[in-house]
Image (cartoon, rainbow, N blue to C red; front, side, top):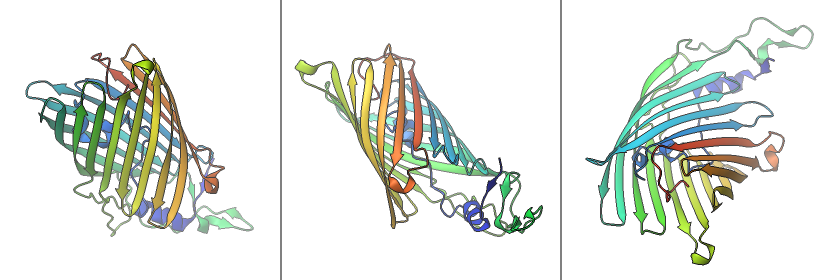
Length: 320
């Protein structure tokens, strides 16, 4: 079914004036998508699949992510390969990003590691206008007219180089693990404007993350806590995710809250709920649901699925 888009909204979209990088709720399982310094940091070889559906009642946005990463033990170099796809406006704008990252891991002392990494890839963006109807096509008597005055757009797929960097600290005292990460994406600010004779340079995307896995005392030795914090900033828009998961044997439940401040003027908040399970310490599945506040109560919320597979088994890991 064709969707009706007001022409001024479409113009804003193709200029990407409000474009923001997607935020995956389950940042514990998707840190390799955010930060190129996290590859191999936990001495694992792993793969991550992530899917996110935003506002299914209006079917506007969906995101897909794939990441494979591991560690070369000598000379302690992590490597990762990521592929991301973003659908906006029912597929009117499709963005793909394929990238490769390398990071160097340094052992500061017996408990502390430091990692710094770089990420380089190709970003492509294309438009699909076949199913769009613009406001100047609508007539109160005749209905939908076949022609419309629309901006002059580039029909070819835009292909741009994209650069990112990041750093991480990991502290492991043999009982608890704590990780702090900082990353910056779109360092080269590629021009993704689809309107002829216009420029829009994709703003840098900053993220700061903290996550840990904490063993409870011997009395509750089967229970682990997994607190997490994620802060992102891009073009005056911020997200803050605060949450905690509880792990008991092979099952995981958790909750959290996300605060979004758009253009430093509009505030939204989301409640988050996680449920998951693991198999043989090699497979971790997590489903996340976010429900927005009353201003967006009829959108259907936000749904996310993360699937992690670890080729090397390790009983105590940050993501389990």
